[in-house]
Length: 339
Image 1: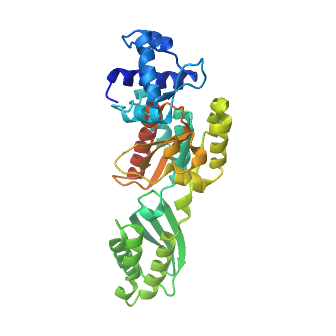
Image 2 (image 1 turned 90 degrees about the vertical axis):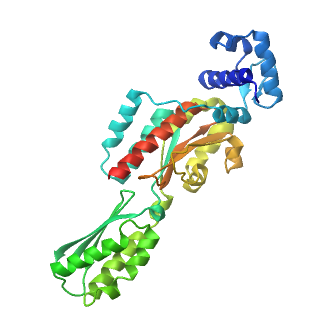
Image 3 (image 1 turned 90 degrees about the horizontal axis):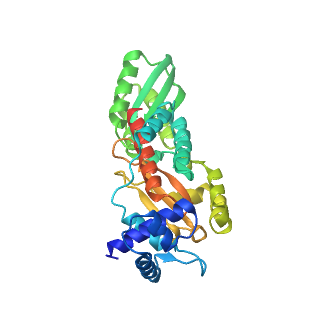
């Protein structure tokens, strides 16, 4: 669709329908938007848009509403994502900077995202399999008891108490600590585990202590419980869509109870700050064909360890939602990078 004027009409219809929740007529468009043409011209443009499937008329005497195809074109033609205001950016920073650990970061993020977008927010916990080892610390509590601390790039910290088969002096412990960090630091979980398993044979006569430490670290790395953990907030925002309860709200409320469904709905994490928008039937579930999903990946540096985003009826503020999703992801990534 090359006609810029018709694209402007479609943009106006989308903005008005999202704002007013009412079908949009040609007269209202001319009055509220500086389209520079007569109502008759706008009506002709609307007729073409309807014929091409971008808008629809829900009732004979009503105005028009965007279709999924219309929302798709609207999103694809956004020249820029609406920037967050200075006040919004300060609010995000101050709210998230107060987090004390990874769980707190996730919980704060999902609440903040639901408040900013007035939609249902979903934040996936960082996926362990994609994370790297940031540091391993071995702390001697007694000559035969160690505290093993594993710190991952996600900000996740695993601690284990280890009983050694024989006493280990500080020099030997220092050597083991250095070898463990050389083998594991900076490596993804799978590669770190492989490198660690080769250590015991390299540190005789203290291979007994090394074997216990390695077994403990590999066990901590293989804990995949977080890979399917998500946090959800903002279900009460769906009350705004009471007029479409059966088609949009009820299926989404049911989906919120199934975390496996939500994980598939928000999709795989995408790197590079890319915001993904799936509208209506573009999603993986037919029963959620009246739902749109706006997501992006987050993680330290350029890596994407997990996904966050919002889900809601297709009648949503796409520019504002995309901006909020991107901004929150950037702040969470920065926090994890500095952790």
